[in-house]
Length: 331
Image (spheres, rainbow, N blue to C red):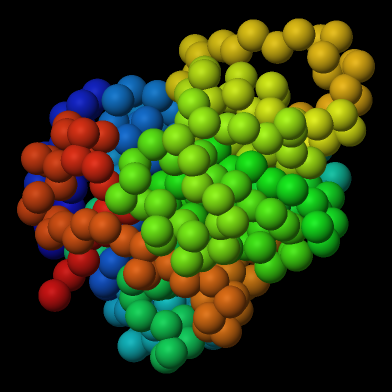
């Protein structure tokens, strides 16, 4: 089989590899769609993903496909099943796993991060990480369940009340999923800060009352601010833009060395709640349900489709291609 292998920092090669054989409790999936995540870009440039990355490894943690073979003791799946994959695997015995916070696992492993992922024709994954994909959903939607699951976990960190004013900083793919999800809670009005004017109309169609340029945020403050970019200036803008007693969710993934200036007195005097959000514990099935019921749309937001052979050329220039979301597909 062919696979896009990260062999070193900023070096990906298309290699020929053996099709894996499933062990006990595992399945082999013929990949049909694999998203290119911002985290893949972080890993490509030498930063960690949800866990430390040791090349060589096949990236790709947003994936869906068809079960090709099943290992011993696998009863829930059979050859030909359409599945979406939750990439994250937990040890089950550390203090976080045993205290209801397994996503903070001390020994977290993940498909496409610590072991070969979906940027390949076939991938081996634990059967426990597979979810049956309804026939009403495409494989591309199946691959987008993972990022939607991350968004759902982020929204769960907030206390959203009907009528809360919300600012979403960043109207890219994640920002658009965040917009649709927060709108379901009855928050209003929702403002989105997004510099790319080509995205403004789509953002309004998905529930934004107002879409503004980053320098044109004219409100006196918002009840909730969600930062979906991960840059120093946008994170600082998030803290500045929230009202007294408000909530800030820093959702965008920043580089590990990024620092922001925050005045503790401002947090004290405004009694702010500032939270982070990490991966997607127990949200995969919820995301499938929302997509299946058309409460959230994901596939129409995708801007670019690629073939596996294009990955080595695309990854170095991905951030300059004005990509809202890129997906690798097999014909």
